[in-house]
Length: 480
Ligand SMILES: Cc1cc2nc3c(=O)[nH]c(=O)nc-3n(C[C@H](O)[C@H](O)[C@H](O)COP(=O)(O)OP(=O)(O)OC[C@H]3O[C@@H](n4cnc5c(N)ncnc54)[C@H](O)[C@@H]3O)c2cc1C
Image 1 (cartoon, rainbow, N blue to C red):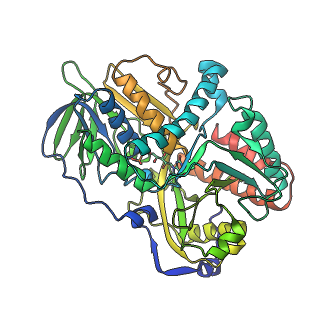
Image 2 (cartoon, rainbow, N blue to C red):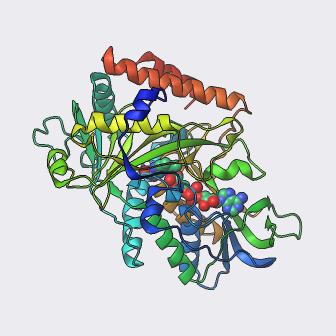
Image 3 (cartoon, rainbow, N blue to C red):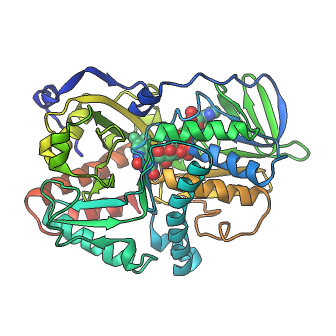
């Protein structure tokens, strides 16, 4: 997606009279923003202290408490549970593995990568099963994932991707091409070839995170909201690790950092993950007639095969919610807490919507918002626990955190409880990727690579039948 919409194109976006930009996300507009839980009342001791109440922090607390009900677990949250990416994302619960398979294989062999990939696929079902067992109604439908190529270069890339995945833990039924799909259930304009994977589900992100927070609180975890942590301290001699807040300090055997794109605002490994903005829009509900044109009865999650790809879902109330990289990180990695996004991003997303679904092109946009995800320098997520310092972490999920955070929560449970398990042997455990360059180099580098990807997409749409050399250059520059 490019950020070059003209003023006229921005004005051309149909907006509903109720249009809103920001307000955290459309998902929270559906549920209403939650009443905040009380802040930390003062200094306290716990067995485990988790910083951040998104999916990562909450899954970690959930699995710890399930495994050992007498464990004293606190979650400290700066705003409210789900305020971050967990309450703003595209609702893709998918088996997609972020990062370079070759890089994971370098330390754990091909078998390790395949085990990680199968664990990601299993995590999709795990989330669905826990949600059902705990009575969390998050509009979940496991309709699989559809990837569409809309030009010859994308087709070549998608065909190669499907072929390569068979070498990395996908069986033929895990992802396959729909070359001769004459009567597609999901009709996306301009599709030259599509691929399908059953390992994905649509979710309503805010309902999932709110339900998870309620479940965790019911299990006896203390969630303190409006409680920003200003410092995380490692164990020093007899001094336990600690999370420091203006309300008091929580000391615990283990402190887990689950702050993803916000991590740079805490002390510590400032440069390890770079925040990257993503924007989304949601239309008003589409008419039955429009849905007859589009199909999409299976509620598959959808993306295209562009370098700067878009992702979309059909919501439970029959809107299209579509997102893409529309809000690049700002110099210094500051973030806009309200979730408002730029008019250019709205116009670009709407143009993508109208291109892929001409039948929906007059549907007014009801809501636009943005959030930030975390990108590691090498693109590979990590989870780990340092028993010497007592500090744990998980994140750098790029665009796969809805599922990966669940795997992280179970892995952190095993690490905290000292269990050697299949999960703790996976290749993403304990990795320490190299850090990002300092600002403004990081910002400049990100702008250059994103610009190259967008130009490559434009060229592929008009001139070339193979992946543009500019995209290969961007890959080289980003070092992933
Ligand atoms: C627009 C968008 C679309 C996306 N789409 C998808 C998708 O479809 N599928 C997918 O898999 N992934 C997607 N992602 C990524 C995914 O949402 C994230 O990877 C995932 O939600 C990360 O969860 P988390 O709990 O680690 O982080 P977060 O949800 O960001 O939670 C971190 C929490 O920490 C809190 N916090 C921060 N600093 C402090 C502090 N100092 N003290 C206390 N608390 C603090 C924050 O308030 C926040 O609640 C998307 C992300 C965005 C932004």
